Image (cartoon, rainbow, N blue to C red; front, side, top):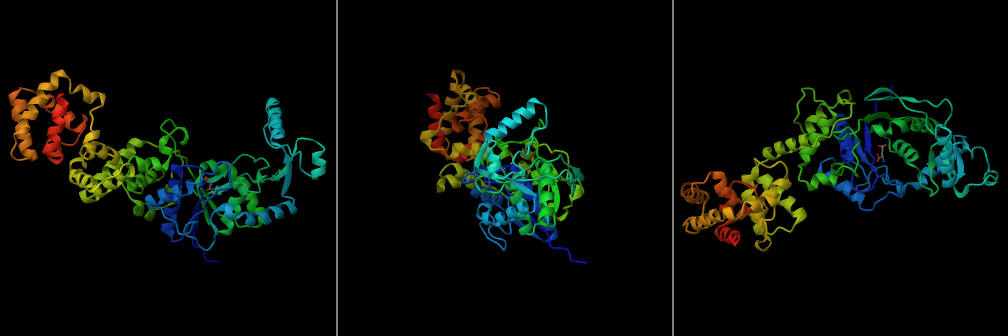
Length: 483
Ligand code: GLU
C-alpha cells in the first residue's frame, strides 16, 4: 500500500479585472481542507485568455486574498517548487503534450476560420441540430483542407472526443455526477496559448494537485479533463465542485450586474475580513452545531466535504451586515479605531488631528455601525475641513427651515455662554433652552442642532458629538445655520 500523499490544493483565478468574490469563496474552501489535513495551498494565475487579461488584476488578487487572510504556500509572487505559477510563463511546458496528443490521434489541427465556424453554427441552428464542431478538418492535411475554402493560416488544435467518452465522474461533494457530451474542444489556440482545459490538466498534474476544488460551472468541462488525464497517462485528482453563489433572485452573481461580485467592493464598503470569511463559510457550509458565528480556525477544524451544501447558497448581504456589526462590536474599541482610521485613509488623506478625532469618537459609533463606511460617514463632520462643511442632504436641509431658525438661535445663545465644554454641560444648557425654554419635544429641539453641526440627520449621540467637535467649530456651524 502506498502512503497517501499530503494534499495539495490550488485556486486558479484568471486575471480578468477586479477579482470575483468566487475566488475568495473557492480559496476559503480549498484552504479549509488544506489546513485541516496538513497539506499545501497553491495559487496559480491562469492568464491564457489574452483577450480578457488585465494587468493590475493579478496584484488585486494578491491584495484581496491577503486582506482576507487566505494566504498561499506557493504562488507566482512567492515562488515554490513547481515554478513558474503563471501559465503565460509555461507555454513551452504545454507544447510537447499537444504534440503527443496529435501523434496519438487524440487531437487534430483545425484551420476553420471564425467566419466558417459562425456559418456552420447558423446552419446547425436553422436545422435545429445541436451546435458543435462538424470535424471538417479531421483527417485532412492543410492542403486538402485549404481546397475547401474558409481556412486560416493559423490553425488551432482540437480534442477528438471519442463516441464512448466517459460522461460521469465522481465528485467529493456530489457523488456521481453526469455531464453532457463535450464538443471537440480547442486545446491550443491560434495564438499558441493553450486553452484553460489543456493548461489546467497539465498544470494540476505537474504541480501534484490532489484535489481540484472549483465552482460548479466547471462540471460540464470535467469529462474533457478526465479524457486528457487518461490520454496523457496522468492520475486524475479528486474533484469537488462547489455550488455557485447566487443573488437573492437565484441568478448567478456577475460583476456586471452586482457590485458585490467584486472583492474590492467589500474593502471599499468597510466590511471586516473576518465577517466576510464567516459569511462565505456560512454560505457553503453547515457547522456541526449549526453555529452561525465562526472564524476560519473553527471552520477548518471541522472541515468535511459532507457538510458542504450543494444547493446554490443565496448571497444575502443583510446577513453580511449583521455579521459585520457583530464583529465590529466584538473588537476592542482601540482596535476598531485603528481599523476606522486605516479605512478612512483609503479614500482621503487623514492628518494626525483627524486620526485623533476618529479615535476619540470611535466609542460613540461602535454600537451603531454595521460597516466601517457607515461609521466613517457618521464621523465625517469631525474630520471634514470647515471650509468644505455643508448641509446638503435633502432631509437635513429641511431641518433648518424658517421654522427651525429660532431653535438654532436659542441653541447658539445657550452654548455660547458655557464655561465648561463637556457633554453634560452642553446637554443641560440645550435642554434648559430648548425643551424647557421653547417647550419643544426633544426630537424637534435637538434635530436642527444635530443637522447644523453634523450636516446630517444621522449622527452619533449629539452632546458627545458637540464635545468632540469643540466649542469653536460648534459655534461657527450654528452661526452658519442661521444665515
Ligand atoms: N481559471 C479558472 C477560473 O478562473 C479556474 C477553474 C478551476 O479551478 O479549474 O475559474
